Image 1 (tube, rainbow, N blue to C red):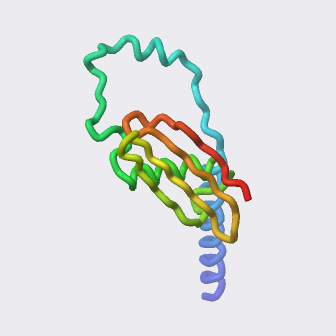
Image 2 (image 1 turned 180 degrees about the vertical axis):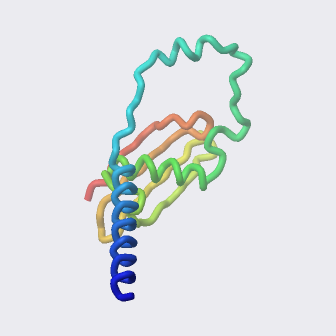
Length: 129
């Protein structure tokens, strides 16, 4: 009976290691991008079919925070699990979002400014100390 439990424990440990390895493999496997001429693709559609929401593509602070944090983590070579404080500001006159993230333990962060209507990035700068 003890042998059965031993083999069950070994089997479970192997399965957990395989799941962990496949998860880590999927995180660090590069995404392959097909190079095409996107301009030709866009030109085949009617201009009247263009849709721009009245509130813009980044309508609220939560959406701005999600996009900004992804960009900042990429700029600073941090993972999505890196902890820190995030500050979101909105310039109503120019319709711009500013997202700033600083990391724990004094690690410098970055900030990103982008348009509310189009999502176009205006500035993406690292904070130097």
